[in-house]
Image 1: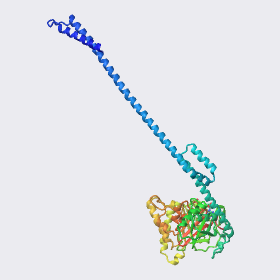
Image 2: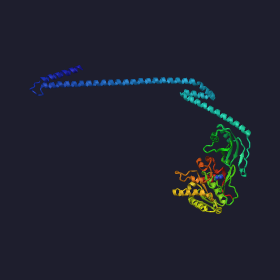
Image 3: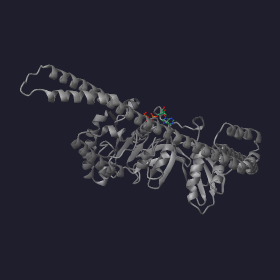
Length: 525
Ligand SMILES: Nc1ncnc2c1ncn2[C@@H]1O[C@H](COP(=O)(O)OP(=O)(O)OP(=O)(O)O)[C@@H](O)[C@H]1O
């Protein structure tokens, strides 16, 4: 390096001396002195350039070395920190293992206690040990063991219940007795049987349910209605909330899922439970042949636990009828029976809505029946409305000579006009006919598939005014309790417990009966 500097210095100095020694008067460039000076300075320049490159390379190498040192330090740092982390983890794992071992030592007596309690030492012990060996956390092992304990408790409970059932059965076998038919039973009650209190599965189930909710009960009587059994239980309790708990437990015991299980106060300290009969155990009745008086307005509905159920349109409680029932519930059958009863007593009957073909066999037999498409209902309502006006002006004697007029509107919803103006007129006139008709021998029977209230969403629903003017309510099976609550006055949810095919409830004023409607397949001879 020194040699390079000496070389640069000497050549540079020589070039300077040559330049200074030049004659200022002779200004020619290419004289030997000048050429030598240029050559020497070029050599000095080239050497200088070489030196500059040398220093630049040196500087770069130094930079690279410095960078290399930095990276190595970082890597070393990372390595050291990860080693520390690993050490910490290992220490933690050691601590965990230590803790688990400690827990295991502490819970060993608990395990052995649980295992001896369950009486399944072998299997559960093996399971627990297997779980621990498989590295299962101790928490999971404990959980599995406590589940086993719970199962054991359940098994113990079941065994207790079974023992109680056996005791009850033995008691019932001893005290099985025939219960008498209640006083005042009429001839028509012959069809309704009161059966001996036996240890049937229903009674057992219900007694078990009562026991579960802590209700002291005893089955006093079983009445067999056409479509259900009415079980009368004695109940001694001051906690009336326990009745609703009993209902829930009874539903569970009898396997009643979505439908209602009617339970109601029957007498002081007695409740009645209506348990449905199986379809094959039900009793059906054909419409009876009977004597009719011209001018009467009786409707014969069917049979109940208290005998035949009749309603009289001439009565203040039952002049107009509202009937609800889903398809297959027996509503059309009842409408045919109603039409028949009233036609036999000389009434004019106009059938609107529903299936007109249902009345084909009536046409030859009864000249005062008319069967109309539902679109005509509006006109008939108008005619009945004017007849109300006409009869309203009559004297009592004149009115007595008038035949009863009965408008049967099945599937009411379909008869309500969609046009708002027409609908308003229809509502107003039908409501007036129902309201004024009761004193004018003019009657309305309205049938619905389900109880839908009139509203913005349902402009064809039943208006509250009309409903209020149809005081006799008949409900057959409905799929939802809402329909029952809308039509019936009490215990509306019971409609879901009805069995279909004529199993119905009639309510009006004080009347409240569950009945089996008479089957009306053909017009009685
Ligand atoms: N009182 C009854 N006794 C025995 N069977 C009945 C009775 N009422 C109806 N049924 C039977 O139940 C079925 C349905 O009856 P019905 O047609 O009257 O029901 P619905 O409610 O009017 O149904 P839909 O709206 O589909 O006509 C029919 O097979 C009918 O024979």
